[in-house]
Image (cartoon, rainbow, N blue to C red; front, top):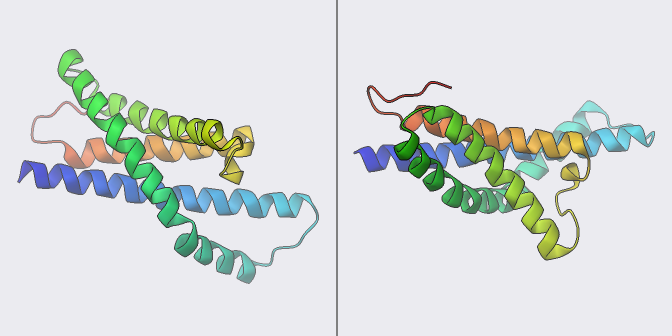
Length: 150
């Protein structure tokens, strides 16, 4: 049962990060259009958001899963060695996972593939989505008496 709980926590963290990251990506792109003087009425904003949840989220989800598959076990190993600050380690792991993912894509492709990450604010917002995923994983996977102090 413990493994099932961890797998569920892992999938929930990846899903939350993916959905929130998709919303961040969409809203940053629409904000850029607004800066260019292009009006984006609420109905269109909602439509574009829905399309991104269907079209963009699956790709981001796969990348997030892969990034978390590396980062969360490392955080678990560090937690066993440090035996403290479990939540902080997973928050950091989530943030580092998304940072590494974005930077790796840039190196591999020669460009910043996720448009929102082209600016510091969007990059930071996407990294914050990863941190939130790490926090969620820590909370959902914690057993009784587990140290979840930040």
